[in-house]
Image 1 (cartoon, rainbow, N blue to C red):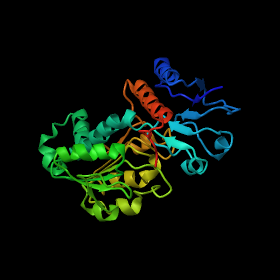
Image 2 (cartoon, rainbow, N blue to C red):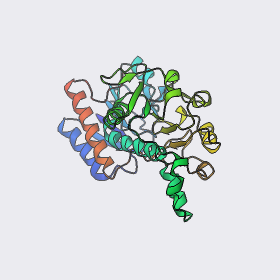
Image 3 (cartoon, rainbow, N blue to C red):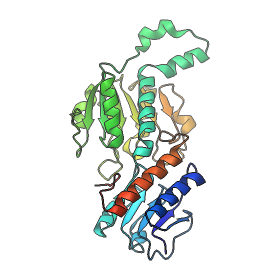
Image 4 (cartoon, rainbow, N blue to C red):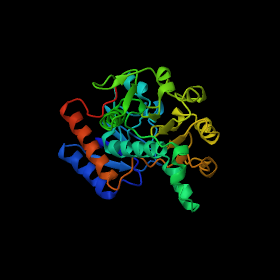
Length: 314
């Protein structure tokens, strides 16, 4: 009998990290076992909690065999879990957004600031042997202080991005139908885009958020604006955004996530200095596995003692 089934692991999850997760379960009086993602867990009788990475899909077929109480994903996003099907069966769903929060925030701000400051273009000039100081007026670098930044999604990551941007002197407009954090000016997306210097996506991937930044909305942005996506690929019309940068209609685009991964057109889409593409790496740090293990343990502890889970969804 297994109380907690860890179904699948990712490359960054070391044996030491999984040991931390297992030991935490044992301290709670829970049995724990590991099953590789490629193999079906088969008989799930007696399993009370499923812990899964993003590559394991928890859909109706899985839930039909699962009579437990908790599905916990080791990721921040949860589009690989059928949340509605879980709720209809009385299964609690939770995630681990804190483990990657600061890393994603850092990368989103680094990418956006780099594009606003024209760092990639200046780097290309240096590679070509040009001392581009005389080109600065034409390049017109912009800073965050006084800039209007639209933060789409005000969850754990989006709120931290907004807080830091505010400290740096930016005017932050927060777009989220469900969240209204104190100190963040809530705004409508379509009303905000014509005034944006920088748009950064941090919302979950849901039926209503797919294509939230499509070509029509991208065309509402001023030509000096930059767009950063470190959330989920299908939120953004990537092809349209790349085309608009190449034509000079947008200053810059940075994306860490893609509609299909690995992204098949990395070389083709990266030809312009105003386009920065990274391989779904924003959340990674050298100690990510241990961070995830600690957050899994915190959620299991809250679940076992009957408290609200820190990563509870909904």
